Image (tube, rainbow, N blue to C red; front, side, top):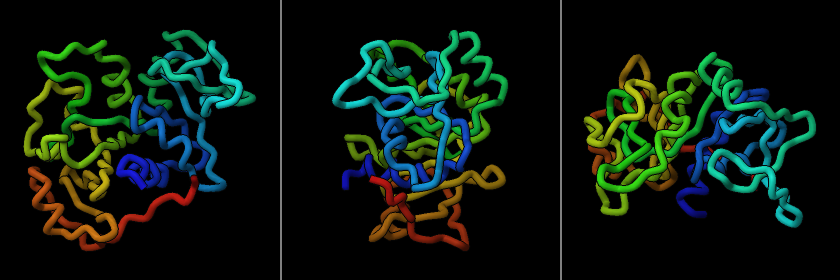
Length: 220
């Protein structure tokens, strides 16, 4: 199983039956394929609909795309609406959880995920609204950058998306929660030691007394 697939399966376990959830582009979109049996989620897409589902691979609808421009489907009972209504849902606190990728997260719950200075970016998109309007902010990302540097830092170095917004960070090595404002290691991946997590995490964190091995969703 690839690291991204492993992360997506673990993130899926954070979602509760009946939740309204927004999935960011990239890795987060994989979560829709990993929901445990019996868990039904209403996926909201910031470009204007609820009831998002994976595209029909044999007969994709060219007129239906998610916020990242990728083909997708819409379930019976779904609804479409304009961007103003979509962001009223987000800003009004009606989204139970959002799942986003991250470039950096720091020990204070700050998130940087929208730009690297000097590189062309399409813009902030809805990330700033989502992380401030959602009840739960889940960052799904690989633990280290391609250079090997930690992405979980003492302080973010890139332009911030928002301050103190992150609820939980899920990587291929570990799960961290912010408990009483403190970055707390609550789970480790199978075969991954605490020493390895410390070595690959720049941020200061505490270890939960209930530290356990990460479970993953069993969905395909």
